[in-house]
Image (tube, rainbow, N blue to C red; front, side):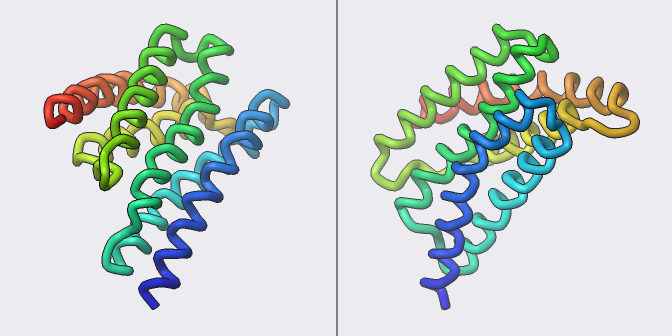
Length: 170
């Protein structure tokens, strides 16, 4: 049973990586509902694969290395689109993406994939929440976009502070 749960967790991780391109294409095509739905499904799959991995007694080293990378792929698509539309400043998007590349590279070099810290996990939740609000295509979009914009900044600060924590621990 544990092996099946671990394989399911790894399968969700791979599926999340694959969602990044259709998400970006949906946003570029103006299909905001589809983009929003793909991001929501990606975020839920992140939670589900972690839950399955914990139920199986812990994830695999392969999963521990791939999971944060797939999060970056999924989050990069809407970040780049929001930066290109002016909804977020490009400097902030590039700063966040540079942080993600730096920490992903550092974590990949760790033998165990360097499990995410509490602040890193919180940063991911804030980023997904911010992006879902910023992409909301339905009624009350202006209000929700504003909330997403304000939520983006604490997620950026937490991203930078968690990066310092990872690097200090190295």
